[in-house]
Length: 61
Image (tube, rainbow, N blue to C red):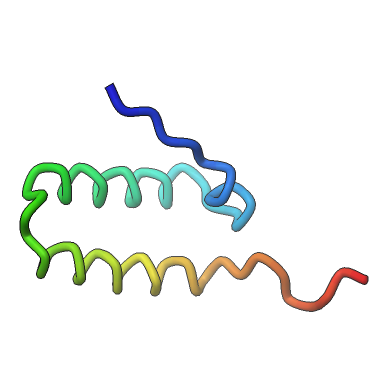
């Protein structure tokens, strides 16, 4: 089995929909582990997704 933690995702405010997206991308990569083009495409999609969930808008001190 494979166990992954989600603290970084929840810290950004990801909800069920975003968690499902991330888990589907993980499954896609594991299904075709040697496909570097797929990995790059998913990396770019995840960057776009993460950009919608900023951790901090300004310094907290």
